[in-house]
Length: 127
Image (cartoon, rainbow, N blue to C red; front, side, top):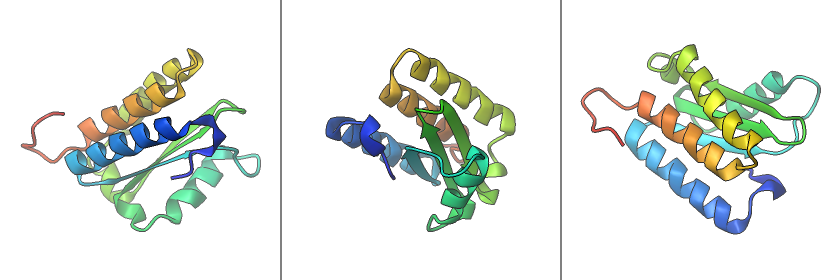
């Protein structure tokens, strides 16, 4: 996870905890990149980052470029079997609402929680 300078050390610890909880609940890997997008196409950059993850098929990458006001979520093939585009879009909308209010950490935590909730194995208790 690259958190850039947009998050304090305390925020990074809180974000790490949110990621761990999401991974335990969903059995998928979550990664967050907060920082500048290289190139003009944020989706291409996010996909490149996602493809570098240890197990891309079982991973979710959330990319946020605060300067450009860009949010991208890239999901692996296994994740897409249980997480719809509409569910991803709802998570992005929730995050951008928090980001617009100046709450980067809260937005990331909210988005991670929403995505994890939607990817929990059948029969698992809701977080």
